[in-house]
Image 1: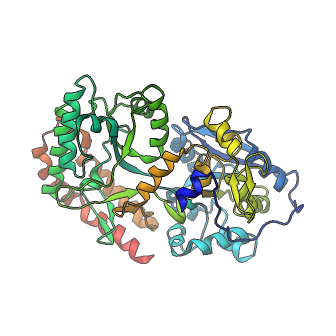
Image 2 (image 1 turned 45 degrees about the horizontal axis):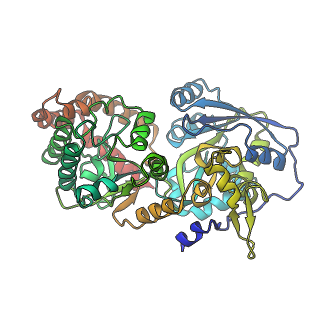
Amino acid sequence: MLKKILIIVTVFCLCVCGLSIAEGEKPYEGVTLTLLEQDNAVLPFDLESESLKAIQKETGITLDIQLVADTDWNTKVSTLLAANNIPDITRVNFNLVNQYAKDGMFVNLTEAMEEGKLPNYSSAVERAGDVMKYYKVGGEQYSFQLIWEIGLPNGAVPYIRGDVLDELNLEVPTSFDELYTTLKAIKEYDPDNYPWVTRWASLQIDYSYGVGGLCYYDHKLGQYVSGYTDVEKYTNYLEYAHKLYSEGLVDPDFLTTTSADWQEACKNGTCYFTFNNCVFVNQFNMALQQDQPEAYWEPMYTLENPWGEKRGLWSLGVGEYQPTAMSWVISADCENIDAALYLMDFMYSDKGYEITNYGIEGETFGRDENGERYILPEFIEAVQSGEMTMQSKLSGADLGFCTIINDWANRATALSPEGVELYEFWMSDDNMYTNVPNPVFTEDENEELTDIKSKLDVIVGDINAFIIGTRPISEWASVVDSLEEAGIERYLEIYNEALARL
């Protein structure tokens, strides 16, 4: 059904629960609010977008948006919070809400909802259900969460050059062992390039390989565990990764490869396999096929690890009506708190949802005979031909000012019919789990976690040192002994105690 909808470029919207602000009602006409937002280098935030103009027109509130580059974002926000000097409204990750809400820096939204000031957000919270318990501090809500009404697959998955497999008469690998054999064959086919290119100084396979990191949520066990402490399994993982590196099957510059470098390799044909965010595959194919019409990236299901398991991990927000850790907070020092509450509540209204996901009726979307919205084909064509960007008219989804996202609508401007098929393929993988938010910790727990983690990080050092061979893998057993002495079991215990309180 979804494929049919997208192929004919008809994007349906699930009805957003909540009340719409009455047309013409602008109680805060002329008020200016400052808003701190993140700017992405690949898909820049557009301060002149039609959606922003429409938000200001509908609410009567002027937005003074301050942008910070994504590379400086964490430092900038942390500095402002530490100085208690944030703008009226600030985009933050929920872990910072948990850290600073106790200091009275943010407006208490639970109180505002009880006073009837946030009817639309109250409806959104109710619809999201139990998962919203992860986004409370001391039982109170201080943040507006970004919610995916429909969240398409987003997260690290394997994909491979299908045309090269065809040429070499190879099957798509179904396990990590088969992947190694396939990469060896590709290396022989093209010895001048490295089959696997990655970014972020990480292969990103530890969870799927069956080990995970220092502390992660195990969906089958329903609790937090450490991938480091099983010496046999983690040593196996390090040996596998080192074999890839030492045999030239993964780009040896992966420690310094930028996102731009990685994307270019995937587009120009010098990369044959990657384990990374699936949202890029469609554009990689379109770029690759400009010069190599027969070339294509083929999606892969979760690979079987050496212990017979198949498991992968989507990012937060994948699925239906899923809140994420991305939040907006209102400063307790805001001079017009009611105006800020009004603006944010508008963003969760049907009109706010429409503007940021579909744009302007008649310009970017229309309605069918049943009144359901669909993205106009001419707008999609204009975006795909490069005449304009999606951000110039819409919110840019989570890269813009948007609080409820319909991913089918936001990506309709970028997806070809083949792109739709890619997403449907990933959605059919039953071995993918959706990540869960971290539980909320008490102040004492946060202090203890920080203290323990500082010791654990020093002991482990850089995992990549084991992969590239500057530290012998045989040392891992002694590393685990030191982790246990430094309190890794207590670290996991705190996480699971916090989880049990939810």
